[in-house]
Amino acid sequence: MTARIRPYRPADRDAVYDVCVRTAHRGGDSRHVYPDPELMPSIFAGPYVALEPDLAFVLDDGRRAVGYILGTADTEGFVRAYRERWLPALRERFPEPAGPPTTPTEHMVALLHRPERMLVPALAAYPAHLHIDLLPAHQHAGHGRALMDTFLAALRDRGVPAVHLGMAPDNTNARAFYDRVGFAEIPVGDPTVVYLGRSTAAS
Picture 1 (cartoon, one colour):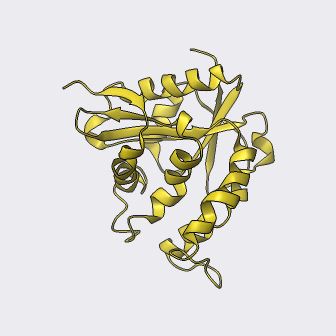
Picture 2 (spheres, helix red, strand yellow):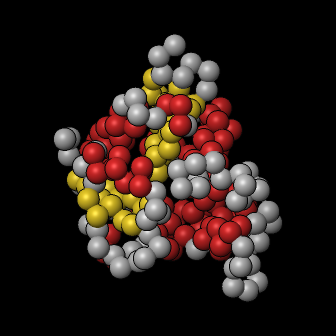
């Protein structure tokens, strides 16, 4: 059956979380790095489908979601909603580290507790941001571009002029994809994250 893009549904939650886990470590499976399967999705997928489900789209292979694009039209508003409505339910499972984080899990839990990290002054002209992930078997088939086109059209419908994303500097496959779909680097000066942005105008 041909895979198709459709709006996210609550029943997709487990599949979306699974895609996130299987792509969260430099584009590959993260389970050997972050043993709790809820951790990475709780940062990079769950808050988006919970707080902005109208901007969540999945690639459905006829059985389940095998990829997604998620995001927000307004990063500043999203950060407020994340702190007020998303974070409280996670504090028991993922308590904030008492001291400086020393393990990969502790670094990510610390990140989870700092949604204000998303508020980067250099990105003010790009108010929306996104996350996109596909299982490896469904990559390199045009699905990523189709998901991106779907998301950009939804942002245009909301009058959003531009969008950004952040990525690990060593994820070269992802960078090549973003270059192909019109993203360009935004100078921020953070050596741990590469920020890319583009207009939402159709290309």
